[in-house]
Image (cartoon, rainbow, N blue to C red; front, top):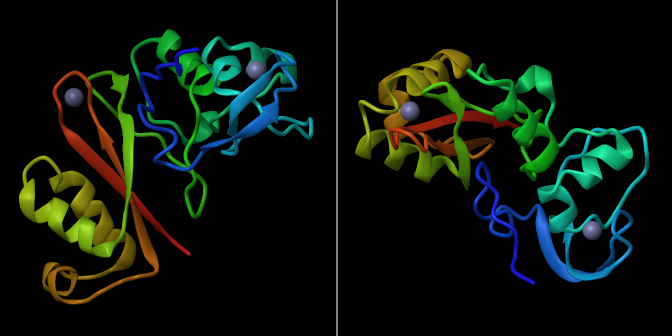
Length: 176
Ligand SMILES: [Zn+2]
Ligand SMILES: [Zn+2]
């Protein structure tokens, strides 16, 4: 069975929210080789959901749950985008509450976690694209551009997103 495609989260295995292990999925009751271990907002205690039951919306329906916190999603143009993101897309694991970024009226795709070095490289390589998010970072931690370039803040983690419409890169950070 082909691994499902997720528009907003192309590689949930790399992001460690889906792991390769045997599970008996509580939604489809089938033996599967992949299990979800990312965020799931529901009152039920549920474990071992398979990626197929995320992709077709059956897991979210069965447990009346969301894979993202709606209040932590940026605005988009269509309620259909929000529905796909919170009901049919695996989340990712932030150090704190995850935020889902948007661009061009749609959600971006989460592409990677970033350590400090990768955040520095990203800003250096794509100064214009990342300008607004970079300024937010400087403001959040009250650091100067010089400090950003020279110091190392290992307690800060970044979350990299890509717009599927204009290929813009966006990011945000949190800390432990
Ligand atoms: Zn399943
Ligand atoms: Zn865009």
